[in-house]
Length: 261
Image 1 (cartoon, one colour):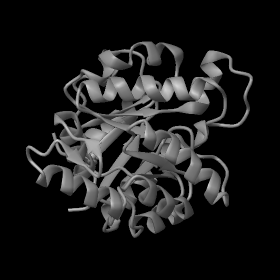
Image 2: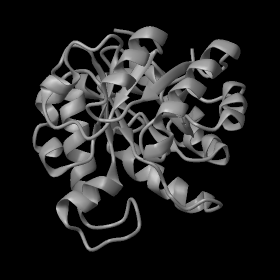
Image 3: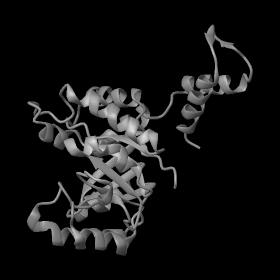
Image 4: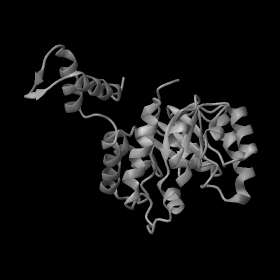
């Protein structure tokens, strides 16, 4: 299964030809062409046509191109089978059966109480590459009295649970979007929170959020240098006064794996 960078994952409405054309040229790790929440029900058929035309007509700069489908929508899955994007994003996943046997690799959105309970079994499915926490729908599912996406006491627990499930099966863990545009510091804080729990990246709802996410989810030069020193000191019990053992070396390898090649 390929290892993809997902520091920044930009969502784009699949029914907006202008935004799709712009997204094709954006320098982002992943672009998600959204047939679900971003498209009104009466526009779904037209959105599939617009998306298909955009994929065929443009050269796509993002490393990964994904399509977010509607849950249980056979027409969407038929389009995925035809167009073969790098990844399909499946919303509100609540059981392994929903992501098994799909024609391309899967990012499973965990955004309901049942999905959170089942997230380890979902991560175990062979075709799944990543789990994505969807904080807004999860809050609604839990009955949380919080109207700001990503806010509320439940988020930390959900982030941790999804991260553990993802890592147990070697999957990526992706945080959901920060909803406040123009608030770079709030975005940075939200990204740093999930980064501290081992997350690989975050969804972006505007191109202006990409740079912050790329920065937060990329190890700093200091972190990279220390990781190299740990791995270079085979058999060394101390580094800068701190004990170094095999756990430290595995942590150092994980840091270096996040650095650009």
